Length: 79
Image (cartoon, rainbow, N blue to C red; front, side, top):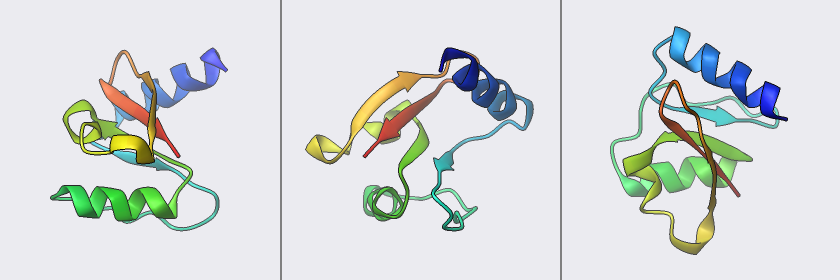
């Protein structure tokens, strides 16, 4: 599993990603959400999100921060 997250982190860093989704077949909205409700709507649609750490603070009990990606600085948040 660690190798998978290293790969995700390397790819996110290479493309200078600001966010992302762990999807189960549903297409991801490409624009960056502007507020908490939009992040939460996306979270309901996907298995998890890659978010800036500041955006993860608004989840409350709806999600679990799983790990921080070292290079990109994104936080993996799972349902």
